[in-house]
Amino acid sequence: MKKIAIFAAASAAVLSVPALAAPGNQSTADGAATAEVVAPLTLTHDAGATLNFGTFVPGTVGGSVTVSRAGNGTAGGDVTLMPGSVEAADSFSVAGDAGRRFSIVTGAGTVSSGSNSMAFTTDARANHTLDSSGAASFNVGGTLTVGANQPAGVYTGSYSVTVTYN
Image (cartoon, rainbow, N blue to C red; front, top):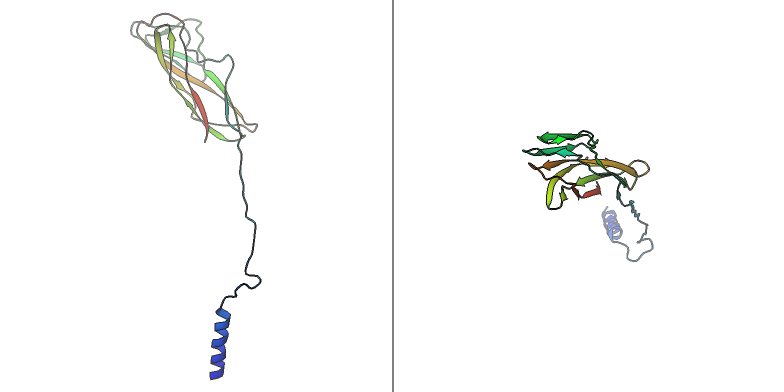
């Protein structure tokens, strides 16, 4: 029995010693790598489009003109839209990677006529999704603040629009 115990202990010692530089001590496999390139977003201001606050009379108190994203105009305060006034939302087109969501950020702006000016804020939807062909469009409305007895003139200006993938 003593011989069996010694033999078992010796066998265990031999089996627990790692093989040094024996064949089969190394293995190689290939890993995987991926990358996805997304089409860049391209924002285009639609030809002939403009955020048009229409034609109005300012009044002695002032007020505002609001144009919805659908292009409907309303006056507030003692501002009066003139008969035949045409208000319109601005419009933009976006191209990019099909089916991807993007955010829209529009800035405030100012319209001026000579040294006279009026400030406005803009309104656009916050997020949108490109269709299956990678296209989308959206409108921008806004609210123009009209001063009391605002001087007559044709006022023009601009504002910024930024689109970013979500």
